[in-house]
Amino acid sequence: MPEQPRVVLLKPLVTSPLIDVGEFSYYDDPDDPTAFETRNVLYHYGPERLVIGKYCALGEGVRFIMNGANHRMDGPSTFPFPIMGGGWAEHFDVITGLPGRGDTVLGNDVWLGYRAMVMPGVRIGHGAIVASGAVVVDDVPDYGIVGGNPAKLIRRRYSDEDVERLLAIAWWDWPLEHLTKHVRTVMSGSVDELAKAAAELA
Image 1: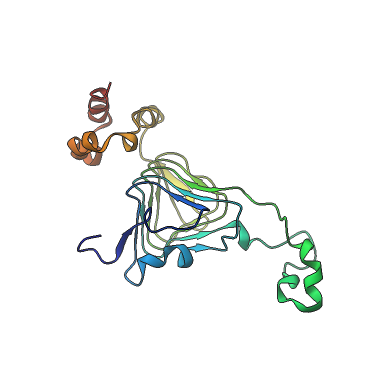
Image 2: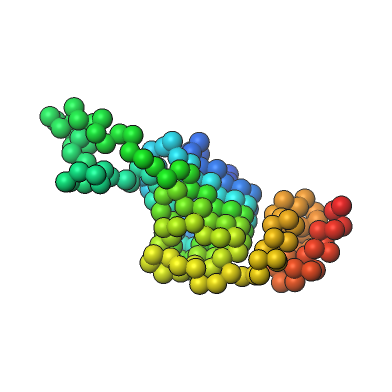
């Protein structure tokens, strides 16, 4: 991004067919933000996908642990002997086909704080905030704020009624011209003001 060498828009950067990123979602890192696919999405061997919505803000050091990190836990040892090769390689079928938790999905307008970690198969709702250093092991509701290890719900940003209204408004799907016209309302307005702006599209 111009004058922001530590910030990259992810959509044009990502090359993996297993990662889908929405418009304007960005990653911030002073070391090498362009290495997001290799440094921040770990053990991503498929077929599970990482889906990141539009307008997401990913802080420095955010990590996505994908299903490929799983080990067998139903026997005496969790060690993946077959990956060491040699005579152990013939037992590779024992570690393939481990149950996964499915795709890891971030909704739109999600903010992941500094060094947050998202575990496999987690779904983080629209408008959610994940605190710095949090380890997200369970789904996060729309407009929820979570923190800690394991991450727990601290509070919701809005009432259930307002969350329903915000999801129906879905400002992240507005045409750019309309969004630009109402960007102050999107950033700092009330739900009522946002609803009025949305009504202009009808």
